[in-house]
Image (cartoon, rainbow, N blue to C red; front, side, top):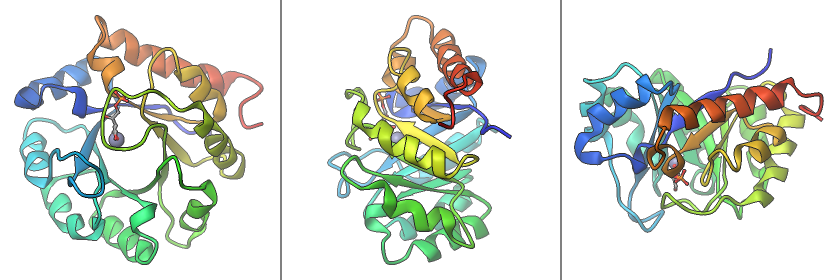
Length: 230
Ligand code: DX5
Ligand code: ZN
């Protein structure tokens, strides 16, 4: 079975003062997941939200909350995010070299989906053991910008990583994050990405629902073409 398209607006580009209504709006616009960027001001030079905000938002939506942790100590956040009602927990491989087995085990024991992210400078081979493990991650996030801020330019060089993963793991959920929108979806989707995070291109659009549907069509179109998986 082909990996399902999952379009995840990044709430980092939403109005944080109106998070509940922004989430509802994204649901009406056809989003599959809500991407929640959790930054600690240490792993990346920006500070955003944590478990208390996820907990508050959970009271207003039943959508899948796809939490992307740009933090130095991801293990410290697992229990609080489980309690808060997070659905997915993505940690960065760069800070989990020594404890990724424990991280994945605890994330899954808490009922969340586990995913691993890699920064632009990190070689793709580093995540292979996490996908091939007896208790594997459910998704790999290939960053297509340096993590920390929305609104940056998509890095096309990262598509070789996506394509390497897609060839090796045909059914894996592969997510891309950073600079995705109608003008870059083709590159990401033909390389093999099926989970698409998009912040500024969705929230900055006149027609956010139209952008979400363009992103979905991009993934479906690439999957239907003969070049997919090659
Ligand atoms: C950046 C975050 C992204 C960001 C994407 O570190 O991980 O999720 O919000 O924003 P855009 O789509 O504007 O590049
Ligand atoms: Zn993100």
